Image 1 (tube, rainbow, N blue to C red):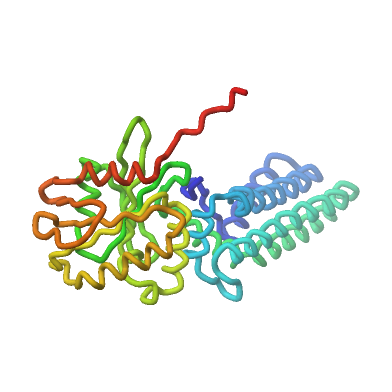
Image 2: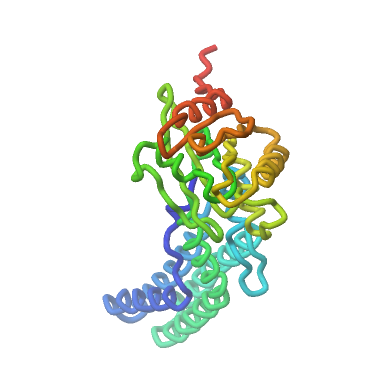
Length: 328
């Protein structure tokens, strides 16, 4: 799953206005006791339904893929006294669910009061119910605001599908990673850019033997040593670990990228240790300028040399097999 389908979260004042204006219209259509009953039913239902819909629209973080869970942990900032990440989202959602259930209780409590009295007394009870509905909604105003902000952040994160084999591109800046992704996908419009912590992540796709592979370039994350990443970036790298099936570490032996080859190889060694569970291939980029490094692949994205061969090497390293239904 992704977060792109999360609906807009209403603000407290918007929800109160919606509930009471709809209730007023419902009351105008009737008179006497029925008008008060209709207004109470309409307002309380709108408040309870909208609040509970907010909570049910969010995924269960216990069952979402670790990739998307870690992204939420990395990207959601604290709000007021509430922590950031998944723990904070759960607290906000719990409060909103509580408020939705309280609105139901108010409806049930005042329904019997309004039903068993005269119109004037019923109107007083209905106004009391409205005041309590407004108070309950306002009490979770900060929670609704936090969930709305979280939704706006998460809906723009990359559509990286954990069920598709994923090739992650790493290496220092200016070593030819983006040029490679452009060349490998054969079309710039096949590459999507998304806000991802403090930078952009680029996702392209290639196909081999009718299997689609994701090429993921994460500038700002896997282009420098771990000690230079902040806490949010380290959590984002953790999310990438869940998605990666192979890592291509680009090195530029010509050093035209501005980084010594020794430094580039040190980053490669660090990533090999960090991504120990997946194959890590060393790619000599800009091979038209220098091949002075021991590598698994040699390419020049500028000339097109070795691009397909590098993709094929990553595909072979992944050795992905489609799971077929068990036919016993």
